[in-house]
Length: 329
Image (cartoon, rainbow, N blue to C red; front, side):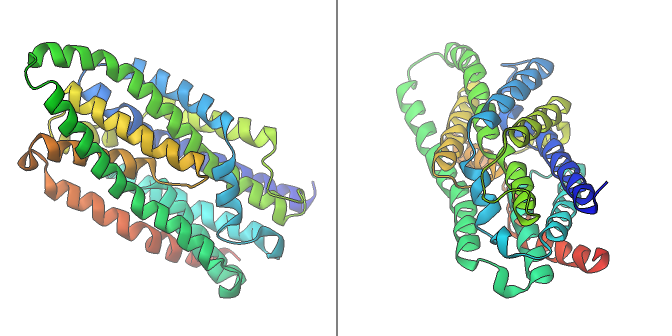
């Protein structure tokens, strides 16, 4: 077998492994609130999330092109394959570490930070597209703030609308509506998160000369969508517990507001071809909704731990991927 094809095979394997891990790491984004309020049984929620993730992943490629071309130009890298391998190993390690400790960190932050670090160390600072990297980081930073504000406003509006209704009847109705918002959130998760592995694989195909431009092949879309769906079917119970029960006591009306907010922010980013963190979007939406319910109801110490993880993910994965590149290559 040709050496280039062998190395490309390793890249595809690592990228799909990242997507699989991303699936079970981020399952909580779509189903944590609906499971915690008993709107859906865990097994039903996971099957639905896996199916909707697959459908969403197959329908869009704009985010993949951004991931594959904004941080660095793959056509100018002589050692782009090695850069991608170091990137994926670093991102996978960080995802597994944060999953093990039940921390809803960002797979997107991990991948972008690792790619920037690997390009910087492996190809040189002049190969890093600072403006493209900054634009992505800006989207990653602003999206949770937007999700928090929208979640807060939607919950305040729902409180006004249903103030005079029976809490029992209101929650009964919203428990049913949560099924649809959980499905919507799973779909939008697929439209954004699954494309990140697509972008990395396409980046490797371009830098190795197998493709001439950043157009995602059909086999890459199917492979990444399948890996994400299979990962989702495994489920990330530690993170589901953190997001669904430990931030604040979620009722169906809160879960609906958080899911709808998260899905809206994620899908808006997908339409703008911007990779954002689905984890950050839904976590921030939950925090916003919880603040609207009662500010003291939110366990801010846990929220603070999550936020710290958000801020340290990019620099840690950048350093890790740079170190891995040095060790391996």
